[in-house]
Image (tube, rainbow, N blue to C red; front, side, top):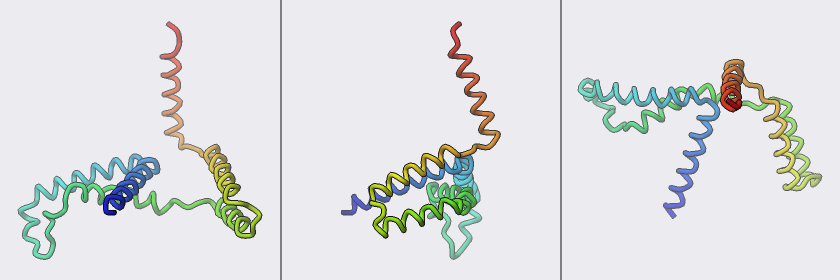
Length: 147
């Protein structure tokens, strides 16, 4: 039984990390770097930090400092993830339709998929990302052109 819990915890951690890299790749990368730097600073100042009586900082390992860095750099990303009111209202309508029997669970899943497709089609990227994508397309088209 413990192996299944470990597998579930590992799966959860992988999904959380994947989400953080998708939602905020630069913040997550900087968080990892920040965690490594925090660990290095703690190792550098270990003699001074060992004088603390009530806190044993030697017990904090590099994985924990990386986790602290990633969380610190992604707090704004996690807090700002709110759905637009129109989508929230649509979710409420769909749940109500299922409860009243107007929609089956299969219909609900199909509507969710359609909603996801519409939202993804309407995603707008910032100008910096759009420019980078355009430059990549130009390079790819130039390299694909016959010589």
